[in-house]
Image 1 (tube, rainbow, N blue to C red):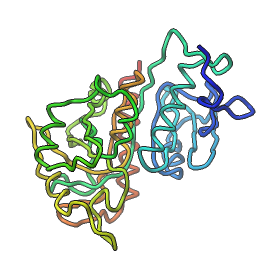
Image 2 (image 1 turned 90 degrees about the vertical axis):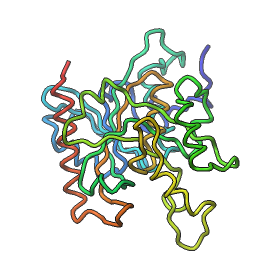
Image 3 (image 1 turned 180 degrees about the vertical axis):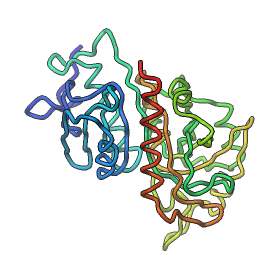
Length: 292
């Protein structure tokens, strides 16, 4: 059945509405960054640039790095933007945009996020690299979808009990990364742990300016959570949404984090741009080492 125009919105030139992209504009290997200015910081390593465009905060550049085709896309901030980006990317490869009918043979994209994050553990220091083994969804966006097949109830229930999670909030969801991508990206340089994904920067991450928090102790409870060797190492705003939607849509995803702050000891990187640049170079090199 054809998808209605109101559900899959296209621009007059036939590109998807927010990303301003057509199927021929993207590679199957995708790098996500939050900041649109970071797109150029990734693509400066490319040997060739084949396409670039921008609409709103969504900037895309497609090119080759060591004979492998990549697209780097800025997602903006937060799980709501990830919902837009991943659904529209999936539409580009898995829906015929002319007939508006899903394809019978589906394409699985490889999606790696290169982002910044704050460590919650004293032994995950500023200026280190962290690979997210799981995303802990604290924001509720994924509950709009049928998530039973991708959740990990044992970890979720243990976290809810440990944190005395309010029944007025969306139930936390824990989603694994792509083990295939993890195996490509991990090394002795990378820490690993569960990445908690909040729906905001201030109150949802325990920051207090003028508004009182629903639970002043939540960050301490997040920090101290452990289940079968899994602990929550960092807090940001995108990973769980990427992992959840990727799993639901049949794509592979992994999140790489440049740790620029340590919430446990109150420190911040003296040169955050340098550690982000080092992580970009590290990630690209790891991905082409396994060029298939």
